[in-house]
Image 1: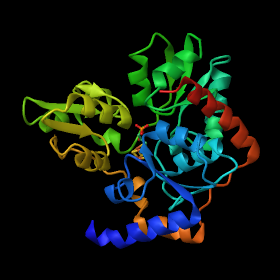
Image 2: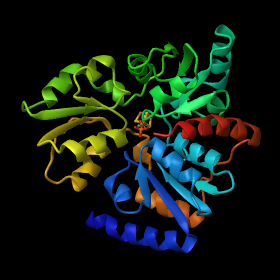
Image 3: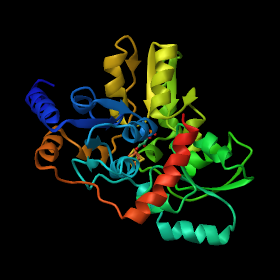
Length: 302
Ligand code: 13P
Ligand code: SF4
């Protein structure tokens, strides 16, 4: 942290000078999450914050689909990302043409896409969702069947919590799918260790968990339950960031790093504030269609 302080100071000054708003996902490193962000949260919280932002300049600390989402919801603002190559295996798992093909195969069945998708895929969807509101969004379609893309594990978790029949796509998060049920059992070192898992994990991993939820829901659960020890089955930064908030809770070291999230660094954020580089630009028609799907998600809320 001490080594990072000059960067944090410089970013804070530049941020004020630019009147910028910094949004950071829960998987961002603590020096970003606690050091420079104005608003932190899960994918849904960041989308809501972008939609109501007053600042003319938004710096999104997270992966590219999150910056695109911010731009779609705040089309009049300038949205920057420190590294435009910060991708996501889920967003890469499906294309707009794949969605059109699914619609041809299942005529009349609405499409719900996870926000971890490109703007072009969102533009082909009826609604987007995050892991915080996937069941509610699926049910808001009012149909017996829904095409749900691209995360098959989140999809099967949602399917277990709704009567709606889901048509799934074989996408997955390269980070969460690395966890195994055995690892989770080992993480439960003490009988009172509680296990919290993200729904992007495999079903056999989710079965071992005491609680399954989005990153925001996991943080809320911790605030409510305050266990002596917890194992967070998700990206490593989540434990690092919550450790500061809950010093009395012991965090087991079971976690996986997302290489895409880790492309965002303090020097990168400083550079993008200084140079105004890596601005998100979108085709207007794609952006307008994607906005409808995102607004359908925001209407459902959390
Ligand atoms: P949430 O913040 O919506 O839980 O998503 C997790 C994730 O994998 C984002 O990359
Ligand atoms: Fe994508 Fe998984 Fe990384 Fe999230 S953790 S950005 S879903 S690869």
